[in-house]
Image 1 (cartoon, rainbow, N blue to C red):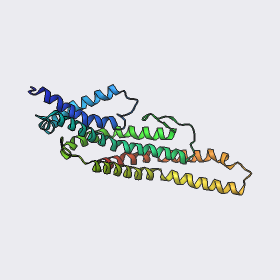
Image 2 (cartoon, helix red, strand yellow):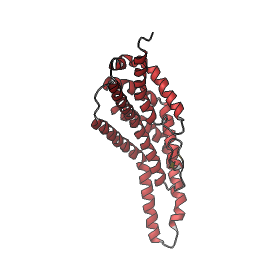
Image 3 (tube, rainbow, N blue to C red):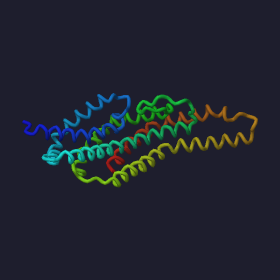
Image 4 (cartoon, rainbow, N blue to C red):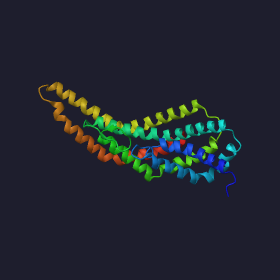
Length: 251
């Protein structure tokens, strides 16, 4: 039986602030193709499911608290939740950068199509790789990792604890650094392939300037790049999925 309806509602709202802010910035759930009503319903449902687990952590902090204190707690919870969602989002945006870099390296200069995840224009290779990687992440229950980290965050950064903006920025920049390092390593074979092919085409063009080497070579660099992608796409996505846990949990 609920003995403090007002405190229960405030505790639920604080849980929604942290969990909802994470869901609103987390890849997949934050997509513009998912309506805000569905996202809000999902945030409320997950928060209600986790509230019994977090009750002893949240309720004592808001019991008897003033309105000003509660407003400050709301702002703090939103910042913490958004930071957890941005860590996952930066990692998947890095994979989108990998797809765009691969497309540019293998000579895919076709007009960009609609991104299935973000409301932006990307080439077909980037769309395929990003969507495939995110799909595998969900199949490997990456959202469970995020939810577990959110629940554990109430022990690391409990409700009402002072948060350091400097530490949050350092966490996000370290995530960007680690993500960029992993994604550049994934795209490096295609970058080297494109560089070597274009150097060879430039040398041939110097030796035979009367031949339109660029137009002749375009189908070959694209065919070679697609063949490389066919051979390596499984390992590419597997390394992307394997790197998510260490990057997310490590920060």
